[in-house]
Amino acid sequence: MPAEKVEDSGKEEGISNGTSMVYEEKEVEESIRPEDLSELLAAGTKESHDKAENTQFVKDFLRGRIRRELFKLGAVALYFTYTAMEEELERNKDHPAIAPLYFPAELHRHEALARDLEFFYGEDWEDQVSCSPATRRYTDRIHEAGGSDPALLVAHAYTRYMGDLSGGQVLKKVAQRAMKLPATGEGLNFYQFDGIHSAKAFKQLYRSRMNELDLDAPTKERVVEEANLAFQFNMEVFAELEEVGKTLPDEVLDAGMPVHGDMQGDISKCPYYTAKIAANMAT
Image (cartoon, rainbow, N blue to C red):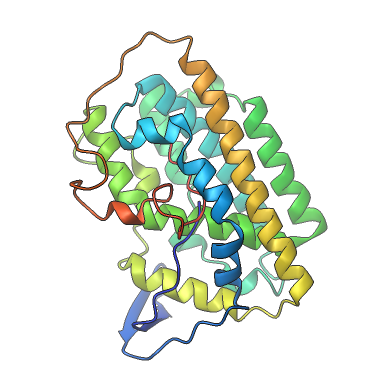
């Protein structure tokens, strides 16, 4: 879920067209300050990020060692996580710390995940899935933050969405090849952001708006602490999936892709590969 360091080569502005957002790149120097929230998050979550990057589940995924059943369970965990987060973002959309970062048409994932679960489980998927204990702890915390201190939702939204945009296309290719999923994208809607035509432009806009939030230093510290907590919850979900994996037949599939270096796409942007990116639970 983490996000990479802001690039200073340019700044993008978004123009809403009602359903999605169009971004124009402008060659304007973007000054980054140490006290900017994006910088504090990048520095303050580095250790947590490194730990998440080195979990066995993440390393296996990036190598294309993906078992379909675990992928499905991971998608279930993501569905409940994003549903909780997006419920709280909707409930707090007028809060001064949330309103500038509220992009439901561009970012919200729970409907895309519902389509993925219907593909994997069938039309009655809702009767077949349930929220796991580790995922429940994660969603409970999201609801608690939304109810008691909505500014903390910035940590959850930033680490999830920016990570998804950073590494999503690479992870989509890995999963598609490993599990031989349709080239038309069924089962992988989670990774497709139809309302965003330039991930780079959108991420810069998002970080810019986040850095402009009127948050005092103690609140920024709480947001960084919350982002580290989000990492911990994600690692607990990974650990839970790893335990489930031990009970399944060893049906590791070969994605036919090299690890990291020679992979199509920018693997350096993968949310668990570089310490500049914040928490993406691409299961």
